[in-house]
Length: 283
Ligand code: C2E
Ligand code: MG
Ligand code: MG
Ligand code: MG
Image 1 (cartoon, protein in one colour):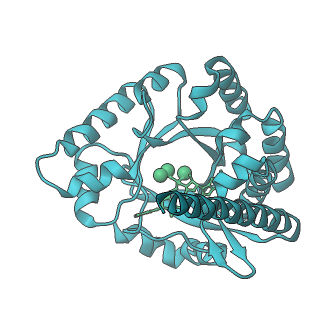
Image 2 (cartoon, rainbow, N blue to C red):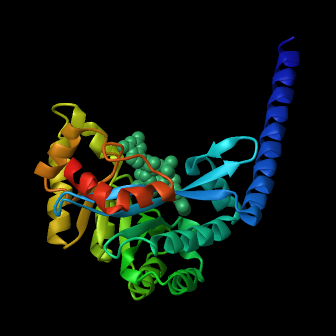
């Protein structure tokens, strides 16, 4: 009897693996179609400078408008795109689209684009970025590339040379999700990032008392100052967090307190002179 149960369980397990594989293949095919048919859209979230009390730019965040499943978040499909190598095509679209849209914004407003680890190691990345800049006419200093600490795990020498060649294009480079990796501090010595994006987990902790969250933020901003890097805190949802971040020397913020990611036409409305003054006054 026990044996039969075991067998049944095994059979069930097998089926579920089958089912998973089938679903994955289906998603991969859908992803290929989306690349071909323009199934993606960029949303944009404001980046606000506390230091200068002004809107600095927007982070481009991809959304997949799936024909039957609705909007799919990047957390769900970027890993699959990475595994299948399709991230190269998706990422190229993101860079082109972001530069194209941002080229229509005022000249003091920048755009930040996420570069995934696989995309980062692709030898054609610099060329892709240069072409996107040339075709759109966006000045390189208005493009920020966001990379995560995970790019250092592979081959540090290669990572550093890629970072320097990207920097030579004139674009800015941010270290995203700072503090979530294994040895975040060591990477800061190796490359002069323009900006450190403090991961939202640190911001979330600010709400509770007595967990040293203030001290951690202070330590990061002090270190960044010493290294001449800017700081931005991610995931700022309320006034209290914003006040503490300001007190602890954080340069900029991003989060639902200001705005959720919005479509390009909403960005245009936010950038209209009247609304822009309003957005500035809000903080
Ligand atoms: P990320 O680069 O760290 O982006 C910030 C994420 O935090 C976004 O999630 C944003 O919507 C969310 N967020 C912003 N403010 C708040 C807040 O106040 N509270 C909370 N709880 N969340 C907030 P999203 O858009 O779902 O993107 C998730 C991740 O997917 C991004 O994290 C990034 O790693 C990746 N991603 C997004 N777009 C792209 C892309 O075009 N290419 C690549 N390679 N990765 C992307
Ligand atoms: Mg990012
Ligand atoms: Mg981030
Ligand atoms: Mg994050």
